[in-house]
Image (cartoon, rainbow, N blue to C red):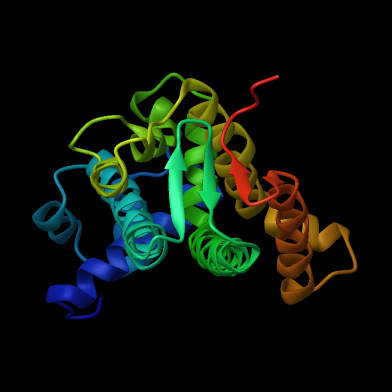
Length: 237
């Protein structure tokens, strides 16, 4: 057994648990299994984590925090800045841009943000698979996927809502927008990450080709929301 302490030992515990949860399943994995895979003493696991459940909670929290950080960088550098510069006006049912050039700039930045998110979930697809599996069970982590809906909470505890609303008071997360974002934006990315390796094995595409194909489909979907100088946030028909 390696004499490893500090950050290295903690990272090895997390990585070992991630791989075991993904391959064996959360329920089937024991703390002893994690200790053996990480090549650490079982007592060291309990030094860093109170339980196997605590390890998974840490993974989920880290996943959410990093995704939030990527999203906030995009919001600050693009949405908020464009509002301040007078290029974007948020209306209850749409994002209104002052020109085709402004909407083109926003879309380019949005594509780049989406690429970052896709790459991030692909890098963490082991955790995504665990969440997908747990969402079909009746345990504590059944609703873990829905924790991503906190990104769309209408309160000051949600930095996404608070930041955009502070820049333009007309901003609101409508029920229709929340449903669209979760089932037609978030879940497709999660499903893509969870089934990425299986789909690649059944297709003739390599990692790069499969990723790019998915992103091209996303571009088509987002383009369908554009009407003139507006990006529609809800269907008023």
